[in-house]
Length: 544
Image 1 (tube, helix red, strand yellow):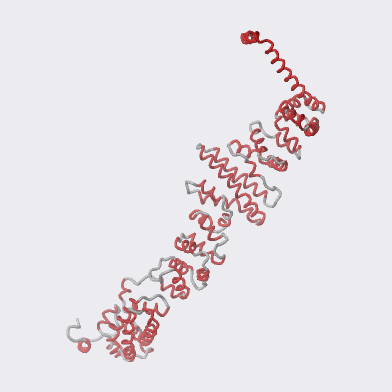
Image 2 (tube, one colour):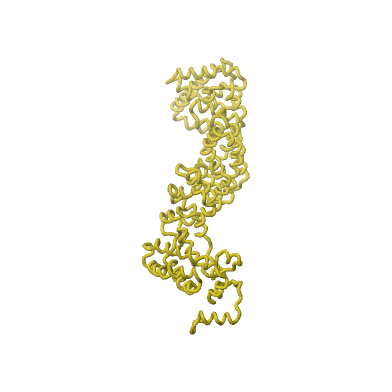
């Protein structure tokens, strides 16, 4: 009353102005009410209830008025589409509660399906479900959304309430194609369902948002890839849940697991990697980029040698992976990797050496590659065999035989190796050759020549390498049987087979050679024989 009295007192000096304003407002309200009543009356006449007709016309009055002024034909078409709903009590009740859904009703292809979907949505989910239609304005998209909501409106509502806009988009695919049922089951339970569960029990808001964002991103980018693979490969439909669990395990040990899954979302070949027997371990140790590049990219390794890269990934051979990355398209490398006579350990050692981990190999990748391509498996084994140690390293002729073996096999031999071999022969075998019979005479002929060529090797290694190799081979063929027989422990039958006179065999061996042999010879000399031997073989201060 007080406020009314104050308003009257205020309006008294300007009564005519106030009355005009009030009358103008009342006139506009009456006109609008009359217009709205006209729309409601028409709907009521068509069988609509008063509540439903008033709710719809009140909410859309401005729209109807604009159409009545500018596009009366469009308004007439809308009203004609709404009039048949008067026969449905369910529609009347729904539109009385939610008149904002009138536009959906007008454009719906299947009103019965739309009524079934909208009637099953709770009041708390209603604004979030209606929001999905805002993003899909085309009639065909709205029709597909209605079908999706029929099956997944609960999950879509939960995602939308948690802040995922347009959540229904991840469910928009052809539900009738092969594999769609398996994909839907995986999407609803393993991906979205698991993400909603984790987000529900996460106390950290950022973590909750990350979980949902990663799940939706994965569904958006991997969804088409998965459905296409399911369409082409029926076995993949059953394997998808297990493969996705393997992916989850592969990233579970990292603090940034959500970021890793987000990156994997953009790798369409991730399923090829996980289908490998070692795929989970490779993904956990290396991530997706490098393995996919080497194995499944357009420039990947040929399929017949991919097993080498897979083993390298699984066994964490970083040197081999570096080599394959740097020379991925090298046909010569591929040819080497295809050699069937190399065992798996030999191939691994060769590839590691090609990456530069071989001090006794030629310098440069190209030279190394050509070097290993010409070697036999036996040469490869000797190339990477451990050096002799302990008592074996001090046995006579160990280093000499190793160098000769390198020459015969075509392996890398340094000038120092040649020099040491020549000097060793000159200082060790020449005294023996004087007293060892036929073999000694043969070696005496080649030793000076060999020593001279060894000296040349120190300055012109490559120029005379072939000649020295030939000379050494001749010496080895003539002297080697005598070296072996006079140095190591042989049975009498072996001596007989070698056609060597047994008494001369024992007496022809210098005492110094016996001391170096580390093997007790079969023969025994009496003191007089030893004394005579010393007198004949030693002079001055050379004998100790």
